[in-house]
Length: 94
Image (cartoon, rainbow, N blue to C red; front, side, top):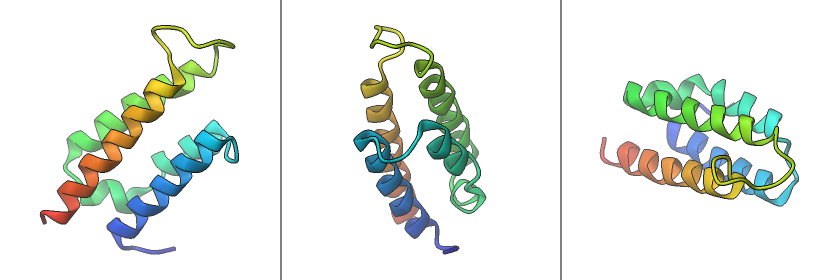
């Protein structure tokens, strides 16, 4: 597996797209994302905290059969995309 954090971030973005298309399960997405030590180590610690919080909320949203105001999967996947964008900017500035 690639040890380049930018490549890992690109792979995460592709995984998020696959999740949105229903080609990847939430459990697989979450496990792979949480386990990406290379990417998380390349970013400031607060990035891991925010990402884990988003993943916790996304996993909780799977408990509901319908979209609810508190647990909108679309909003949460959008927030993960925003995290990816911010992480990319942080990696590029280093």
